[in-house]
Length: 325
Figure 1 (cartoon, rainbow, N blue to C red):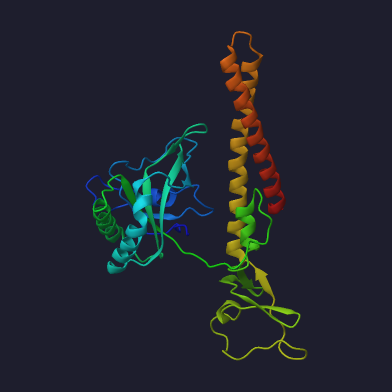
Figure 2 (cartoon, helix red, strand yellow):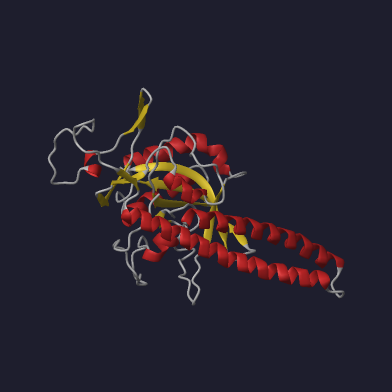
């Protein structure tokens, strides 16, 4: 998945008479907030008219955070064996360069204690910069008509920009609180690299291979040999060309990496303060004599939950702080 750059050409304001496929830039960027490390970019959703985007306001702007949930007990589960290939074929016919087709639900965090699970969604990922909002609108409505032929009328369709990698092994870091940050420096494929003498130019490490006891990595030549240099063979052996040192991440990627960690620490710290406030309120409830047993039982249960969540956030903040340093 990828994130829109600051100069991505989407409307900052959407007039009321805009075509139904026009997406506000903020909605495109923040609609899938919380789904992954980098929120995927929304192209179009059929629920747009029914549930229009509302931009948060106020001094502390907080976008609703979403989580993926599986689909159980819906007719689409029974029909998907036959319906899935039809969805694929229709997208192929429309020349949509899709990368994935999933059937999901989204759980949206309305507040710290309130979560809402939305309707079933046929969630389609497409290669970046290959599908316009208008084409996504037309394709989505064709998919809705296809669903109707299977008597399914309560499902939405959403398009997002998405890429994927085939990995042949687990991430090298032990999973933990900051795993979404450690994976950028420990995955077996796709490490961001740059040359020591050209750290403003960035590229990606490809696959690895062994030759005897030596481990080699493969990348494109222009990552370490900038444009304008001679396209001659380079070989670093004793008494030949000086070696070219390689850095993990260039300047831009490393600064963005540190900024992401700092933002996550700030987010967790804010949530931790809310947990502390809730803990004080539940403790005060338990200490009162005029509270009935049922309310005290609920307070005790919520107190334990908040204490556990506070501990988890505190541990994550500490680990992220160590990673930042």
